[in-house]
Image: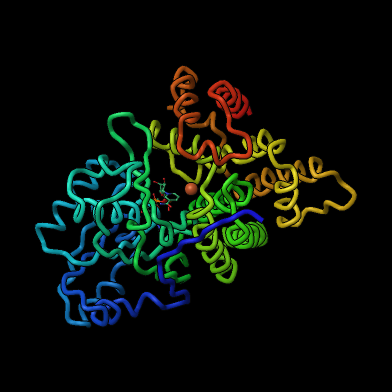
Length: 382
Ligand SMILES: NC(=O)c1ccc[n+]([C@@H]2O[C@H](COP(=O)([O-])OP(=O)(O)OC[C@H]3O[C@@H](n4cnc5c(N)ncnc54)[C@H](O)[C@@H]3O)[C@@H](O)[C@H]2O)c1
Ligand SMILES: [Fe+2]
């Protein structure tokens, strides 16, 4: 067996109602100036009031920063950091999907490391970030347990990563009640984001025995529950939320792969929702990647409930691809061609950027720009 390591600095509390303890948690840990980091959609969904109340009842003034936007940009994170520093904030409570959690992590990076969030992409941080507590309200990103923040570099219009264990949240409060009223379209797209994390972590060239164990379990849980979750079944929603956290625990160490190379380029360039881009590309990228590790894709097919008895690994793996397509069709994932802003004239730039993406070497086959372009054209024609 090869050598491997594992690191997960974030404490997790899971369960219905765990967010209600936030005020006490802040007090017990000695913080004095908490600030909630969120977006206006979360506020409108009524998800902040209980958290605010808990913080105020513990004796704190609760500062609310609700300027987060989906697909956060470097400049917005820097603005947020300046605001938090001016207010003397000593702990950030991110409430929301990946956008709120990543914005908080990027803000917290700048608060202690200085410079701008863009300066900290793809380099080691000097300092531990200001403490961040994460409360996910979607069931996709796993950002509550990962030590990266995905933000748009406004110069290249591509997404980049602040990636360092010093960027890990101190605590994840994973509460199924936060996704009770999550609209079905967001359950499906963010749930397939989590499935993508789980599959990509499992097939990754840097996967380890620990990440394999966690990611394959997440694949099974999402495949078993995503359809019922989109229909509002709370048990199923809780399973998908927990699975998204498992997937984060796995890909935080095992990386993601080619679907994310594409998704972060398309997401940055066209401002498309991350879960949607992943869902659109997952089947075709998997199909192209199977020759790099047929056995692992066959394992994913089995975990998704496909009957693979008597099949070769390649045949079994293809059953898995069909299963992903079926799931995506059942939960209403849109086609790439329905996004009018997507223009094939941009494909050379996006294919080159995908091939240079930091996750490309983790894919079972490291794709060239030409292969990425071929995938874009195939998916666009679907
Ligand atoms: N750091 C990581 O490990 C990691 C992993 C995957 C993705 N990401 C990043 O996360 C971002 C995507 O995050 P996301 O998919 O969670 O979506 P998001 O945070 O961008 O939110 C999308 C929309 O959903 C709304 N919303 C969220 N929760 C809701 C709820 N419970 N009820 C009603 N509305 C709600 C928000 O207001 C927002 O308008 C992307 O920028 C992506 O690149 C980060
Ligand atoms: Fe993702």
